[in-house]
Amino acid sequence: MENPSLKPWSDCARHLVAVAAGRESADLVIRGGRVVNVHTREVLDGWQVAIADGRFAYVGPDAGHCIGEQTEVIDADGQYLIPGLCDAHMHIESGMLTPAEFARAVIPHGTTTMFTDPHEIANVMGLEGVKLMHDEALMQPINIFTQMPSCAPSAPGLETTGYEITPDDVAEAMEWPGIIGLGEMMNFPGVVNGDAKMLAEIAATQNAGKTVGGHYASPDLGPAFHAYAAGGPADDHEGTCEADAIARVRQGMRSMMRLGSAWYDVETQITAITEKGLDPRNFILCTDDCHSGTLVNDGHMNRVVRHAISCGCDPLIALQMATINTATHFGLERELGSIAPGRRADVILTDDLTTLPINRVIARGVMVAESGEVTVDCPHLDWPQYARKTVHLGRVLEAVDFEIAAPEGANSVRAKVIGVVENQAPTKALTRDLGVVDGLVETDEAQDVCQIALVERHRATGEVVNGLVSGFGYTGRMAIASTVAHDSHHMIVVGTSREDMALAANRLGEVGGGITVFKDGEELALVELPVAGLMSDAPARDVAAKADAMVAAMAACGCSLNNAYMQHSLLALVVIPELRISDLGLVDVTRFELTNLIEDH
Image (cartoon, rainbow, N blue to C red; front, side, top):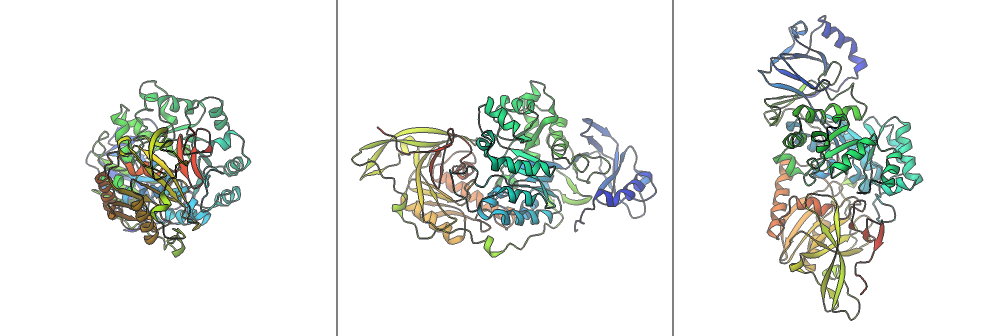
């Protein structure tokens, strides 16, 4: 069944009124259920809903007067009717899928609205890439709103992107039909210091009457945080503890609590509601980053809601934080986020409000999933060839490119090492004493120290920046390479063998991007991501199967971290403390400056 294009409320208002009054017939009536009202936080047993032109026309005790000869009637048989779930902040590219395939993956889990920030493709392809994502998003049978990326590069002077986003780009995008606001303002030092470019982007968004997304990735809640709040961001998802959540809502920001594939920040912040008793209206649930394996095997926003409930949150409050709170935040309370007249008819039928099985999903009045299977088409954009040829290495890389030279005459060195923190975005700035053999710094399996390299892939410079990383637990001779490398999306290669690192990097150059794992000179796994080196337009189950094989290959190399690939892909994210790597060198993110790999003795 094809999902019709949704009419604006103004085009169907007369019909909605007539259906609610009983003068005309609804397209669909659902009766015999229990309606969850997220406006009043109550369950209305026996209430019925009538849907016309893809919107709710009547929500009340008896919709019998809305039924005509052509009206389809669904008996909910005691099930709960809850609003379709909304993801307030997420990156489609993190699923390794195009918007169409991402939609296909999440629809059976009850997600009917997403607020997406395509800043990954913006770093690779600029405004043109954002436009492609925006256009495919508008083709889908669910609501996918696009936030115009704000920071490419995320930290000017500390990395080089494929393209740069300008205030003029932001102002232009604000005129596009699917743009809902500005994507996360990651350059928080720029805002704090009054950077004219960042403030101009925020001003262009606010002048358009749209929402500014936040990203304050610092534990400092002093004057710098207050300056950032004064700069205009309306929300923030980088909180990791209760104090972070409280600080944000006290400044009039929405606290977005995320549960992604690797980010577990709900449990540590939701106590602001469950224990401190703060008003939950300004708290919102989101995913931020979910890879395809999580989507296929575990769920999407339904997973987040279940998790919030398991952390002690009242089920109805958890549902508010994934529906009406999100819609209100983006100025769409009259358009979606609740089962109420005039809103888009996005509704889930479920047996239980705690375990949240997703039995049926209706979006814009059309059945889009039933018993875990999608029942509508998710149309694909015809992605142009230039979007599929974005990995430019410039030359064949060799093992020598991954050598770290020690100071002349040194038998050992003290080096800075990026320390991975399981299930969190921040890293630790570590130091380790490492041996030197033939003038080269060696990795150290006993200390869990291996190499990391950033390979430039946008301008074919052939440049490689080398560093050290700890926390993955890799053993033996291995390497993993990825062209998903937030946020500049060059290529990150991590390994214990320089020969395998070269093999892995060259392999991704051959296939046009993705992730590959090598062990003892042999490829164990490959996930092809031909669209911008970030996404696949293959079905989510196929991509997830390859991603699962990649995770298994990482485990075969000694890694036991939860969702270690997400940690890998963020090692070049130079806006989240403490230590990162970029194409310009090692970055101290506590000071926002480049730093030396080898410390002076």
